[in-house]
Length: 151
Ligand SMILES: Nc1ncnc2c1ncn2[C@@H]1O[C@H](COP(=O)(O)OP(=O)(O)O)[C@@H](O)[C@H]1O
Ligand SMILES: [Mg+2]
Image (cartoon, rainbow, N blue to C red; front, side):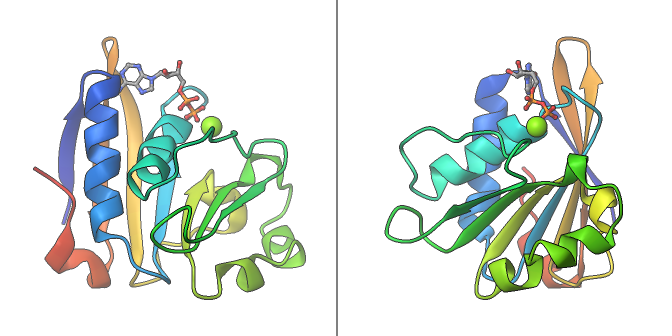
């Protein structure tokens, strides 16, 4: 099943991020695909803000992994950008499984980590340019079928 969500501006990104955040559970992965500038970090920021975080959200493009913990956010969260990985096995080598214990994962460039679509808790989102705005193509894993964050 596939859902398209129109995201014409930054306010729409924020609302979509909040809809994802409201449904997010430990163990989930939100896999954010799309090229450079597609809006992956922008959507991740919307999720993290709606989970309760009020400070800055650095792009994890350099550190690869940024961690958020309660009480700052509603549930433990890993925000990762796998762009710089050269092999999927590097995700395990940096300790991704340990980071993910009890946490939800927001993953930019999920393909570089081997992909997560085989996990029932994966919400796969592909962002595309449409004029000045964006469109999200949302493909929920089986654990997401009853809580798809689409209007
Ligand atoms: N829905 C949107 N409409 C208009 N501009 C957007 C939208 N989403 C993101 N942007 C803008 O696109 C630029 C790149 O976004 P970013 O989230 O950094 O992309 P990515 O992480 O995919 O490389 C930013 O300047 C951001 O403000
Ligand atoms: Mg980014």
